[in-house]
Length: 263
Image (cartoon, rainbow, N blue to C red):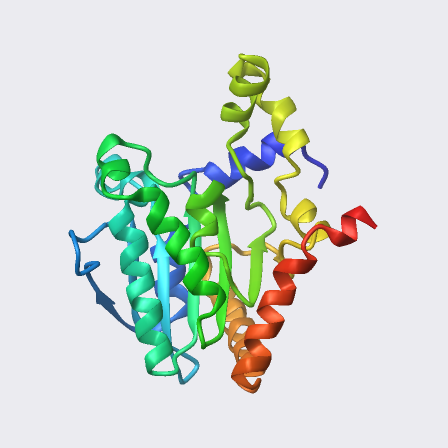
């Protein structure tokens, strides 16, 4: 089906779309949640812990928006605070210590931009995640399930494999924010969306992701079962790699981004 980029943005933002927790409980078993960043507090917009994936012990980290208004307010509408990113990094370093692969489920319009978040080091928290994930000595797969907005999404997407659902988006800024900056008119968001190249197809063409996941049956048990098998098979290949080879391949992955489009 042909649709505009902004129509895809609306689909990615739909409150009828499955959230991070829906994916977490649909794909994984025996999930045990872990809380807190050991510095400030616990951010409800980032849910993480231990789980099983077809017999493999994994660490799962999901950005959760919530469904109802009450849930969305509790989860800051899926906009993580610094303590959310620090919690995610704590769990990733724990996974590295115990040789568990990490799977990140991303759905955020961006990091929380309040004064308190800035005072507690939002930029530094994101930067630390980018740096540490690049050298994390265990496989990482990140899956964009809805919105992938700016550094808020990238902070969980420095991975060996990045996949996107076909109606997810991945962008440096929201279309409305881009239109407001460039043309001082947020109503030109559809035009900005087209120029931002934010769809899964654009991301695949630019080398930013490895795979697009079709959304047929999205949210149904058979959809989660299929995704479970695909993630498990991908992890098996990554776990078979030597750690140094894994790190070098991850580094080269990010060095290649955009080169195919330039060529």
